[in-house]
Image (cartoon, rainbow, N blue to C red):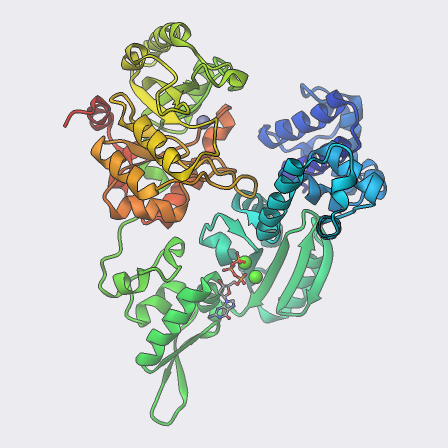
Length: 579
Ligand code: DGT
Ligand code: CA
Ligand code: CA
Ligand code: ZN
């Protein structure tokens, strides 16, 4: 059965194509909103039996309902095909380059016949853009820079996008009768923030392998079969992501999971270790080599026993990057990593009071449904005016409203917070007197992201040295595959954070995951504190928490290093900021 995600992806791509065509803004918006709605809705649309039921969903009119109906029943959409005929799909890649919007992309397409990134590069090299109206020196420089970034990331997809597809595909493969196990391996199992491709392992009786490969190659998400064999098949999905499926014997499943989870660097180090013990490790198993040179299999069906037979404590996939995990494992001193169940509350979110989609009460009830003990509501401050940020007076009133709402939930703590901007000069966007009224102050940067290195370092250090600040939110402002991190002396900021007892955020939004894994590791090594939050702008986005938790795990984070695992008493102590 077709998932809501599958339908939403279609609508999203149609919206982008319409954007390129510079169609009516409301029409484009309708497709985007419908895609977002469909992703969030609880019911599986494919189960709907009457088209009228689709039309009854708010935001979905007759024409959209017809397209959704068509996608459900044909797994395709004629309107989408028409658009693709008119506009080469390569133009969509151009849209993702900084400095290029729909207007400029179409201008390049219509005047220079540019169809994809490679042709844009060529035109730039030949200086052809300089002759076009509206392409000044500054814009061209921006596009050139954007192109470099685009090439760096061209081949890698954001984790969340791959995970959503992985869930669908794994689900479809698990339904094949006779198949025993289907699991995700590769960088996605390690929760790396981007993936070059998706690796899936399946196991079952050998006679099934051809059949499984056939079904896999014909999945509705597949646009191209790149390689088809009886034990390995590689396909490309419509969204551009490549998927490797391997079918292995149940006897080797553990060893294969170990091998194909990687990382390559981790595997190379394991092989060296195995050699020193006169063992051989491969995707088929762990083998002892006797004096006659023959091999005896000592592990293979389970991954845990592979590590065990190598004399190692089990190593979580997130740690398998050959950055010290093997020697820690040998000495049995690996940290006990934080898990999702350790999280007792979310400390950054928005409501309809600024730019969120759900009311305070809806957010409170959603947090309770997640089993949390506390939450903090943190609207934007006044300088973020596009998000209806709060000034001193509105914040003062808002705090009173939060306290009033708290009375309705005696067994749950609603902290009144603010996400206050650190301005260009390092001062905060709101008066200290009103910040003092807040239970939680989250500080962050949303403007003037390009500043000289030293100035940016000073700005952030000044911002978090303010006595009321508890958390530095999305510390580098990067957006995965979209915006590079801001540059500053992270070590200096970390030292300042330690001195002033400020926690650094791991923002769990799929586009952010900021701080990233390697910065988390630096915080943990210096014995700093992190705070894992969703920055949710709707109740469903509260569910992104797991992405932040796995990023934390990649940074070797323990429960004790994360303030979201604190009891409410301990958290209140931390928020007092007393020595
Ligand atoms: P990616 O796809 O770039 O996000 O990262 P991975 O780690 O998923 O890399 P991928 O898909 O090329 O390969 C999957 C796993 O297979 C990798 O993590 C380890 C294993 N592997 C691949 N090539 C080699 C190799 O040359 N040597 C060893 N030891 N393992 C390899
Ligand atoms: Ca991979
Ligand atoms: Ca692969
Ligand atoms: Zn923010």
